[in-house]
Image 1 (cartoon, rainbow, N blue to C red):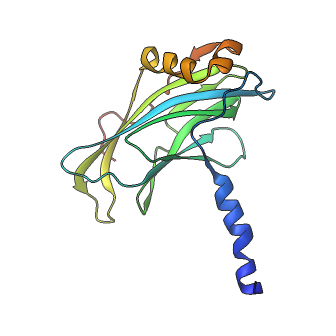
Image 2: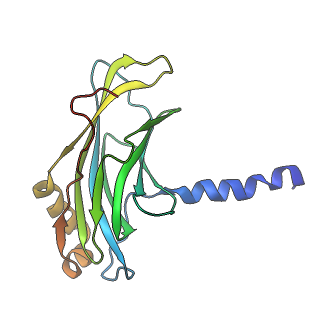
Image 3: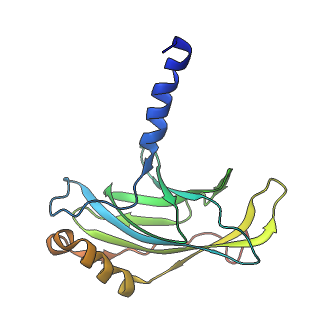
Length: 181
């Protein structure tokens, strides 16, 4: 391997470490100081918008850790991941090859240690109007579907659900109301 190509290896390793599989293994032993985030991200399109490859980031509000990228390969994406306890926010949304849409940390939620934390359903609606840069306009909304999703999580994660209590910490939406992004 040439030295010219050798520099790509650390870059590829760094990029690979930034995204997270949205489903964790069932376990009755969480690491100290961590909790489980449970959310569902539903991607809906209106006006004939094709569903692009999408991802969204979750970032700790007060901390220097790297944001966690959650890939959204389907229209309905159940996310169950371990996170260190603390205050988080949904941050950057990427649609296809277009990135840069941000919630500017105005959609916070809490992860308590030793608990299963349902943070809500994030509803992403893509509209048929496109901005000059190619990004479709979209709306983000939070819904509480915990009565639907928590029994499903308990069924898929019986060890986790028996070992840890479940709490509902819905994402707060501090963005201006009814604003197209």
